[in-house]
Image 1 (cartoon, rainbow, N blue to C red):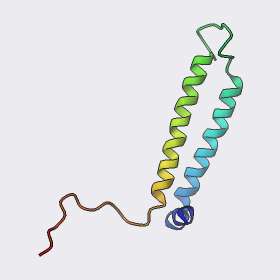
Image 2 (cartoon, rainbow, N blue to C red; image 1 turned 45 degrees about the horizontal axis):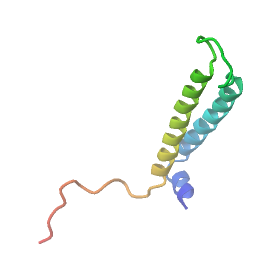
Image 3 (cartoon, rainbow, N blue to C red; image 1 turned 180 degrees about the vertical axis):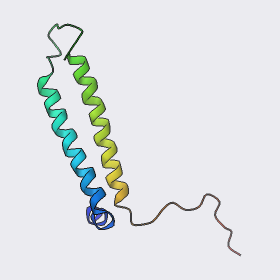
Image 4 (cartoon, helix red, strand yellow; image 1 turned 135 degrees about the vertical axis):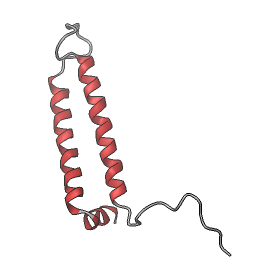
Length: 89
């Protein structure tokens, strides 16, 4: 029921997170297909394998953060408990 809660809580934000995630997956696929092979010698300027791998790592990090954001959207409670809980009398 997590995705249902996220859509019910904030449909535009959920749609935006899913769209951004899909866009990053497309860009990561294009980056992977356009970079040179890791095993071939290439110049150190341009679309090298190392720059492609760094770009893929950054995009993977953004996708993971989007999954975390989507997980937080699924929460139905408004926020965390107060830092200093009140003592019961």
